[in-house]
Image (tube, rainbow, N blue to C red; front, side, top):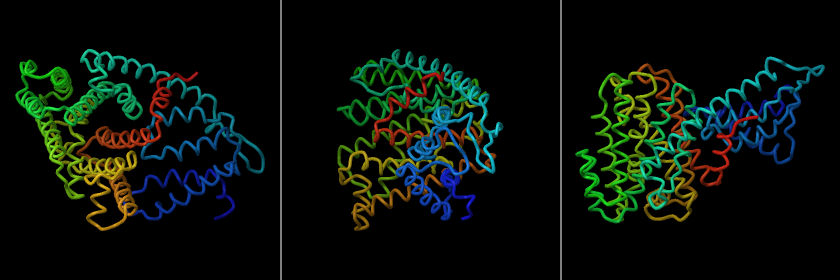
Length: 422
């Protein structure tokens, strides 16, 4: 390396670039490992001053990037953080000290703050409407769920943040809130017979069934029923075609999968590692979580819906990535290796150590994310960019939350994004 490439900024730029590596790009993988260690050493030794610039908060910027790599970095959260680190009076070092006004300028900082505050006001209004909907459904009862709908809205507003995607963000928030409740209900409700009745109510789509359901299932059913009917009307107006039969079919399939998973759990049915991953993929409910939002993103997609649901490549790549991610996170969050968990299954089948099993699953998770990244970034005339973006950002959202659950950073992170910049 020449002398001009020994500055911390050079390693930092290479580290960030190396995170967008596709499958098989071994040199970038090595570069990522090398630059990450170099930056970590610099932070530890308090030696992150750049040789060619005097910057306001380079060390904090590097610390943030190391704690929030690209695969969990939510764009608006990163932008909010960068406002604090941006130096409008940074000085560059050559044969003399000088400033570059096209890079560091107080007007840029002012515009960034104005944009953040404008989006903050819009997203806050959305979040308040979500909370009103949540309470009207009766989901504010802590005995039913402790889920905070503002957290779900935070995640999508931090990624798909533009004003034109307002309806899509609300649909995403409601769909994911309901899906989490449904998953939890099917895992914890005592009576299988009542869950079967719930599935029948979903299949026949008749509100009269609510009278036969216990209170909790009744509230959940009516929440799902009213929300899907409303979404179908919105989607029809946006698409110019009735999409209710399609959405209803997705809903029927998913509640049946939740019921199947509950039965497997009750009988303690143990699968192979591969079967376990496939079961996790089905339980992720990616289609029913994302498709309602995609109908409201401004593109007519009803003729190409097969490129977006479980039949599509990008859907398969996202579910594969998330299934592996969730499987390894189960162990990291709660390192008690039950015999049905992915780590135990792989260890048993391949007669290897627990450490080897974890390393294998982590490597496969990274490979799956690289494949998802490639599918998202490459041109594709069949899938609008906004839809590919939602697939990709959903993957980052899940990883962000799994990471923050381990590190207990959720509340502070959300509060920061919902706070105006002065």
